[in-house]
Image 1 (cartoon, rainbow, N blue to C red):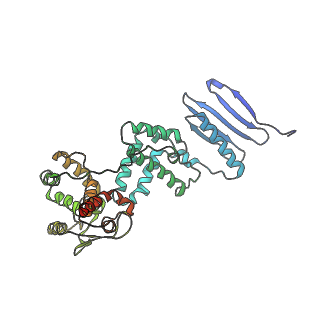
Image 2 (cartoon, one colour; image 1 turned 45 degrees about the horizontal axis):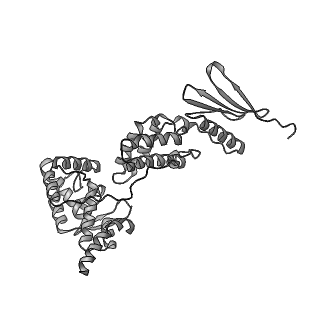
Image 3 (tube, rainbow, N blue to C red; image 1 turned 60 degrees about the vertical axis):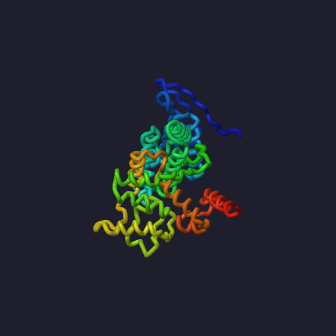
Length: 360
């Protein structure tokens, strides 16, 4: 170790700014941690033959850790220019994600992502860069949102943020990014699945409200959902050409697999009515967008005085009715498109009750 120059810590206070400088003489290694204002710390890394790297943090420890990481990468020869990640804000990245990624999602995927993105863009983290956003920022976002919405809503927003970083790493040329949304602890969500069934008389009340406050066509759409158990997005995209006799052939499902949905006599009657008034410009059976269906359903329920009922609950109701008719899980899965039998496990109590009746 004789003759080897050791790192020297130099403290100074120029014009009220506190700086901490790490220097190894003779090799132009230099990392400066400088306080900016009352709440920020800026790390500056200078190495001969490389552009100066700067990044600002809320906490000094994060600035120091980043500086060490950058210098270590330069030393190993693995350093990558982070300029794009440092100049792209979360809000800008979300807009790009919606335009390039979410737009290709099936069903309500794009609409849901857009709503989640709009929420995130109203929070202060939206103004931070992809490179600057830290775990403490995401944790603060999580805690702020938990004060006003349910845990599962926050989990979905964090999932969007996490996938945004994954796309940036894999598709946008920023493999060096750390995904802060993936690291933090997620809100705990109750394991009990939603189990909203229609009460006696509620179906008639709901359909009547559809006719009075919207249209006969929307009443048909709701009744069709109860008959088939199809997803909202699948119903929105259903075309007259998809109907083959007593079967609706779904080629573009959420799972990406073809599904043949058997049609009851009531479902076929609904389709026959819609075929008589079909649009010449739109081959879709119900001619409504996914998001419009959800929004209209909420309004109809409000008018009818029906509480805590979501459109997706109609799929749960339809699935329950299939079990009550005596179908086994494999048959139900083939109709509803549930990808695994585990997803249908919540309905097994219906079959147990039927078996109890059979046992006497």
